[in-house]
Length: 339
Image (cartoon, rainbow, N blue to C red; front, side, top):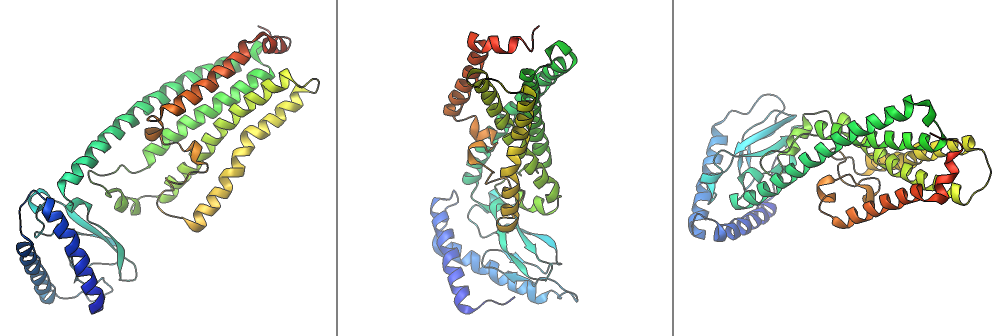
């Protein structure tokens, strides 16, 4: 794969701009001249190595020097690793790292190149600190969802097994609890299916090529639907309370069918178009970003850092409980669901 002289010159200028800027702040003190000499030696060694190597007979990506690291000949449909270039000022900190690149099925190098393992270690230290915080937050919400799953299952069994508790109000509660359980189960399952990031930024990308993207995307779709259904059933609770206070007459059984259609059908009206648009226009990775509705994105790490959302959801919960405790609402369900 050849490159025009003009493009090579632009790549050199860009590379040297980045290297010189990092060399000024790097822990290893080197002048620009020394860095350039080391880079020249590395480039010449790469060219000599490639000239001495025997090209493979079949289809393969050509060996080349991309102005950053030396790439050997590679088989198609493979993720190729190259050791971090030794001319970097901080090389002794990243000597065991690799640059990653994809060799396509047509024998052409992919445009993407992951050199994050060869980055300045000071940058990686900041990333590792952030990753540790996110891991702790993930452990917290995993424990929380697991406890919620167990307690909701117990409450669901009580409402189902005791026939005296069977009424429209508790049927809505059952569906709300079921949607919350599905939401928790979907999120926990999604976390297990998604590949864990490596110790450096960008390590996750190569792993995604070797895993079943369809399973991860399906888990993401189910998660979005369950989250939407959970919020929709909260809306159904409010609609039911409104009907008790305002509406008079009508069959509760007929209303409950409408509640079922709203609670389980409305989320599909948002999820299905989102899946179609995402597949056609942004079919990348595991569809982690750009949720159906940004307001209900299930990113617990970010959500737990927003106290405003806590106040909003806690206030909503208090208002729902107040409506049930309020005598105006409490007298309506008594006739059809007495203990």
